[in-house]
Length: 588
Image (cartoon, rainbow, N blue to C red; front, side, top):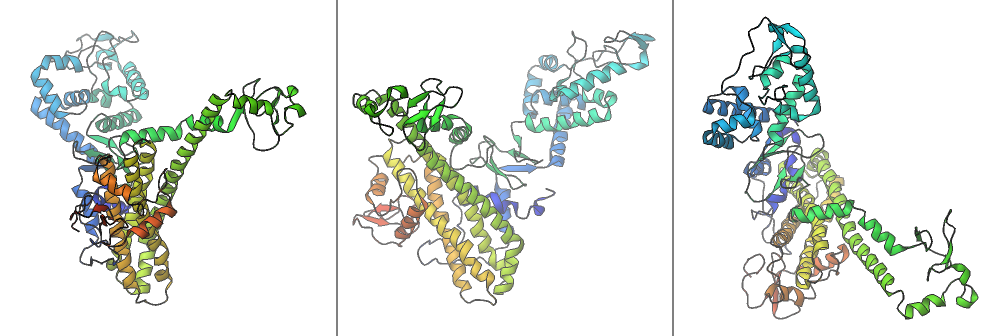
């Protein structure tokens, strides 16, 4: 983490969320049709990608940067208010390092501010007696062995060191330390710490002071990645909250969870809580077990007859179906594998409520499992793609350059494809949490969401397979292959097409699918094209998504419904009367 140059294209790994979906120039072809028209990018050098960071609305700060900014703020306040550096530091800590707020409050009511932070207008000297009594240990010491804050209350050096050391060991509260005298509110500044504290305590105090500049400042936050020492200064109100640190970790500035665009922070918080909570364990217990009628412990039955014996010390024997005592069962009740008491009671409705609750719990569990499995699968796929990207950057790109006699500068399209895969896996992962919380009754929105998700996933699978499997042929080739240029065209085209799919998906989810409704043309179009919506009711599946992507990518051909045409860029189904795509606004 010494510099941006040492991060082996740290931006390449994680920071494409804003660049991919900001409406900028796509990587590769803009056409996105079946011909995969390739755009020559040889004139662009590798700095074009990393230069995007400078356009972002945040700044990455290392420890030196933080210290310099802190010193600048202290000096500015000290100069403007004509106070000491120690007093300026006390003021800034009290007002959470906001220079503008310090100025506003000071010039509005200086006396009130001084009282609030413990700054005396005229410092008081210690009494000029030869000996002074310490206010803590009540021992008498020569005047030179006593020390006092601006208030003039004398305490011996040993008591001061104990008081300061204890406060520092108690935590960051030592930054607002006051005079030990219970009736005094005078602040104890950094000068007293430097003069009286031990070396270790001074180091710890300095760390607290530096960290407070980040943790108390509403404009800065630490990167939440484990072991990372970078901080991020963010410009509020600048749009996307996605931030990528120099350590390669991407996170959301608003909630400090990992980057989750286009899903909002509230949905992410609910999803993470659900994944960590015990609610799904209880749902599983309710759906797959029954309580012992005597001790109420849950029992799972996976095979065998209806005669159940609870584990010790209970040992109660009962019927699995009706939960009645087994002593009342036998041949007259249907034997070991049936229970006519249960069947009769069931027909009378005696078990309707418990069966309904069990069925609801089972359905809820199955639905959650469906979305969670796909969320987790895309997470693991993304981690694998990150590993493959790193391997490509470190060793495989050089190998491919040698095998195909191509300069590495002309192989940038492969890195761009892997960067697209990594980012799309992240987006696709979070769309499953979005789908889980999408209301079931909003059928038009759900259909449109699943259609966009399916198209995006199908495009991503094609791109991933091309970058992972087909590239291997050229890596293993003994001599340059003339088909490599065709592969270049195909991979660059798939990168562009996949980007278009995910742009549509991100744009739709960030607006809450608000353009889709029972009376909207988009909902009608998306529902009427049955050849394009091939995903299940609980989210898209890869197998079906592949079929969707293959059948829908047909250039500008008409769909089965003669009143619709498919956009070449985003495959959206538009009314025949429209000459501009209602989704991507491209001409027909």
